[in-house]
Length: 540
Image (cartoon, rainbow, N blue to C red; front, side, top):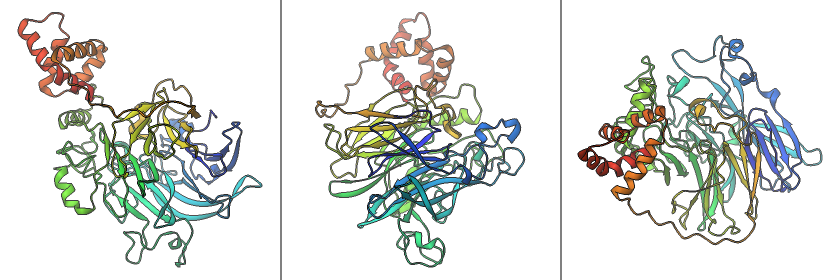
């Protein structure tokens, strides 16, 4: 539908039957006709950005100052956009505290890069096709070069429409923010939270209090708070739907090395980060959500992320407010995670790889057009360029299927929109193959369509697939065949890296697979250990 956009961040199917698109680096809001592909720019916010395009300036000139993760990010349209409520809500980063500092503008000792974001409501002038009359909702949302999250969503609570906004933990604890304090567990800070604002002001005094609901869970005292839920890492996806007669708010969230999360967001609940990663199952016991070689930073893993003594104990200490995710992706073993963090801390050239998806957004498919899809979560991914479908349980409170994947391509899918009848899906792709922070090496090489809006259209036919049955366990002989082909098909460098990611007891078996000939005892040992070795390699 469109290409060459400057990192489209949000694509939304509007009540005007148009696609509304934000460009993260271009700071433009556009309206795209899905029938013709014609596009009109409604607003250019590049002058509102009080720092230059660092991504276009050589590091030798600007000292290596980073572009914030995102830029112009979330957009939400009032459902009555064309009938008396012409409101368009935007979130964008406008200030950089380090803009005037020498060097890269970061705080000393990896103390972080400090930006500020704002939420603004505009009105859509349908005759002039412009956005006008901006009203500030909040101009003090903390931001960073990493983990800004940035999704906006209008959703009802008890019959009234509110504006929800996700804020990540700002990467506090990793990379250039490794020494920055992490506030995801502090209800008095907006980092690592889902925020709730009024879609229209109430009668409170003061410049910003009218935009904060008086019944928010952490708003007691003289200072009102927009915090709705806490304990989040980087929730880039946010979606609402009625499922089984109940309104549900869902979020998708990046994990550090594993355990990417799908959460059911509820008022005042705590989702555990950085004290619990994924389920409270103990796979991060003794570890942290990051590690570094910077020995000047605290703890055994050299990070302001806390060392997790016991996920189970942390979940219990958080009390009844704690919530496990309703689904996780790639919950790796403690052994593999220990290897990953240890080699990261040592700056090992053989740092292991691991599977993850980098979920960039989220939507709920509520239509009946595609057989079997109704009441499914749809999750676009950055790392592997695909759309994941997760079928919800009838009440919407749990995931009832394994991951089903579609539309694989060498792209970074950033966002998703659905036509009201459910026959068309629109996926936005990043312009660049990298972003800041942990995704710097996750983008596909040679991206097929950069800065695109791609339409996928369901035509007809098909039947609802039966739930997949769990595969039968492999016999030792079949496992040996598969693991031998896998190991010998790797390059020498990849063999070294994959070996480093295995538990110590599996590494000698890996080595035997590389020998041209084996003795009878060696053959017996490899055959016996092949299923466990194959499982360990697939987990990476």
